[in-house]
Length: 269
Image 1 (cartoon, rainbow, N blue to C red):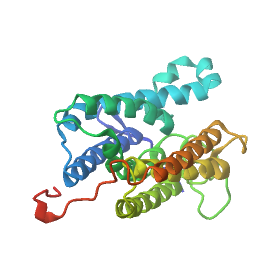
Image 2 (image 1 turned 135 degrees about the horizontal axis):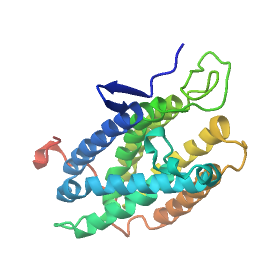
Image 3 (image 1 turned 30 degrees about the vertical axis):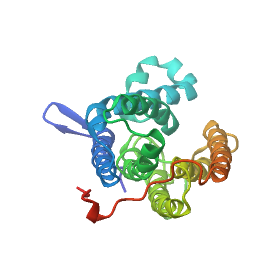
């Protein structure tokens, strides 16, 4: 079985499947986020103005963190720092670049949007987008596989010798499961009148568990105490502590919003 082509040509134009996959993912995130904001009665004008800057800053942050984490490789050949189409984006770096940019646009929006309510509504969108992005991004990039394997589910990837664990496919399934759990958590937290922000914190905890085991089982070299593993555990610990604080504040702060019924006139477009 041959690897999936990582690029194809239309005349003199070279199209990278990794970049095309991410482009589709960004469009999906924009569509789904706008849909959820309208469903929960939140304004979307800020999204129309700020989505492109958010994506740009997310990519910049993701690339910076990846390059710093793999500094010896890029110091040896600095020009490859710019070759984003070859892969090499950190999910945590993407959050570090994208979330502050989104906050800036939220605060400048009119009417103003409550940030904690907004991140609760956006959390499932991020997980659904990661699920699609793993399927259409790393799965189609150069050297996109995990550790070598002889198992039946192993796949061949361009730039790697022998069969590899198809980590992007596994991650896509895991992210989709986290997405479904987060939707359930949002409904449950609304009934329990948990403070705003609780859904996003729970989603971060779920995703951090996933990221830790992805690295430990399929990606990390060395296998234990890889930087991503450490950061995932720190995020998980922060999520647990924050949820504990929010539980104690239940009933004394704005609560997780329910989606309005159709009779309210807010339509899901």
